[in-house]
Image 1 (cartoon, rainbow, N blue to C red):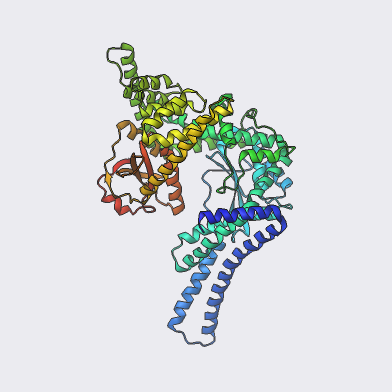
Image 2 (image 1 turned 30 degrees about the vertical axis):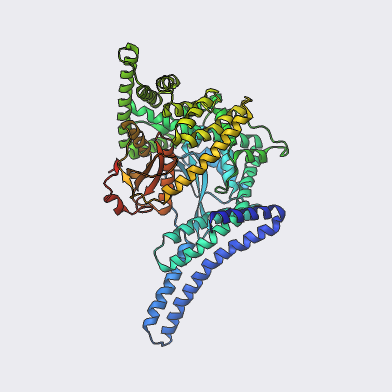
Length: 632
C-alpha cells in the first residue's frame, strides 16, 4: 500500500469513527482479531503437522524423504508463529528505581494505579530522555504484558511533582481498566504489531518471509483502520490525567513540557557542548535542573509556544497536537482558552528519587561521558582554535592596521555564536557592508531576525532571491515565516508582497523537486569529485556528526549534476555502529539529514548508510570520498 492510499483509507476510517462510532469500533475489533487469528492458525497448523508426522511414525508408517521436508516446513511454520507470539523486548537504557529507594514516588504510583484501575507496574526506570512512558513487554502477541514505567531525568528536572504525576496519570491512562478497555487494548495491539512486523522483516527463513508478507499487507490496513481509535485513546488518557489531578494541572504540564522540551533539544545541548573549551569532564545531567530554569525567560517561552501551536496534526503520529489537546481539556470545549506560557514549575521532581538521586545522576553522567569522551575532547580543541582566531581578529580590528575582509568578519561571527550567547549581528552587518551581496551574510542575518519580524529581513531576502539562484527556495520559504511573524505582531505588510513571495515559493519548490528527483536517481558513486569545502565548513560538519552516538564512521562525496537551480550536491556515506537494524539505519540517516541540513553546507545533501542504502564495497573503490569521522 502506497502512502497516498494509506492516507485515503485513514481519512475514510476517521470519518466512519465520527459517523458510526459503534460500527467502526466493531470493525476495528474484528480486524484486530483477524491478525491474532492468522498467527495462531499458523502455530496450530505447524503443531498439527509435527504431531501428524509423529502419529504416522508411531503407527508403523514408513519414513520417507518427503517427511523431512514436510517436517522442516511445519517446524519452520511453528517457530515463525511462536516468534510472533513472543516478540523480543529490549530492556530500556537507564537505571532501575525501587520502592526502597523512593517510597514517596511508589506510594503515589500505587494510588494512581488504583484510581485508574490498571495493572501493576513491574519495574521503574530512570532514563536520559526528555520523556515519560509506560513501555509494555509483550507476551503472546500482546495478550499479556509486563509493564515498565520510564521516567526521563530531564523531565524530572523540568516539572514540579504534581505536574509530573499528571503526566504519569496520562501514561497510565493507556492501561486503564474501565469502559475504555477496547481503545487501550487496540492502542497496545498497534505497538505489538509494529514490533512483530519488524521481527518478520528481519527474519531470514522462507516462512518468516511469508509471514512478513502477511504483516506487510495487514499492518498498514490495521494502522489506517485503528488510527482514529488510537488518537482518541490519547484524548482519553488526557481526560484520565485531568480527572485525577485537575484540567488546569494537566494543561499546565502539557504547556511546560512543550516549551522546555524545545529548550532542552535546541538550547541545553548547544550550551553544554560549548563548555568543552574549558571543562575537562562535564556532568550534564547533574547540572540540568539548574540549567532548565533558564527556559523560563518570557520571550523564549512565547516564541517556543508559538512554534508549537503552529504545528498541524499528522498521520505519522497518533498523538494530537498541543492546541487540540488543550482544547479537549478546556472546561468549555466550544470556547477553549487562548494558550499562554504556563507559570513555571516551582521546583523539580528529582527529590522523588529519594536516596537513589545521586547514584542515578552520577550513573547517567558516567554513561554519557563514556559515549562522548573522544568527541568532547575533539570538540574542545576546535573551540579553542576558534577562540584563538576570534581574539586575533578582534585585536586586528581594534588596531586598524590591517582591515578585515568580509570572510574574516563572518569567521568572527561564527566564533561568537559557537562560544557565547552574544548577538553576532554587528559582525554580520560589517561583512555585508564590505560584500553587499554575500550569500552567507544575507542568509544568516535573515535567519536570525525573521522570527522577530524585523523589516530589514525583506530587503535581505530580496537580495538573496535575486542574486543567488541556489538560495531562491530558502529565501522564499523563510519569507513565509517572516511574514507570519509580522502578522502575529500585527505588523501590516503590503498584500502584493505576500502574493509575490507565495508565487516565488511555488515556482522555487517546483524547480527544487525536479532537481531533487534527478539527484535521488543518481547512484552516489557516479559523477563524483572531491568535496570543495573550506576548513571551517568541514569543522562544522564534523561537529554535527560527532554528536550522533550511533555513528561509527562518515565520509563525504560531491557529485556534479547539470540541473537548475545550479548548486553543489553532497552525499554523506555513513557507517552505523554494530548491531543496527534496517529501521535503526533509516532513523540514523533521517536524524543526520535534518542535523546536517541546518549547517552552512552550500548545496543539497543526502545520507546513505553502508549496508542499508549502499553496498559497503562501493565505498572502498571511491577514491574521491573525504573521511570526516572514524571512531575506534
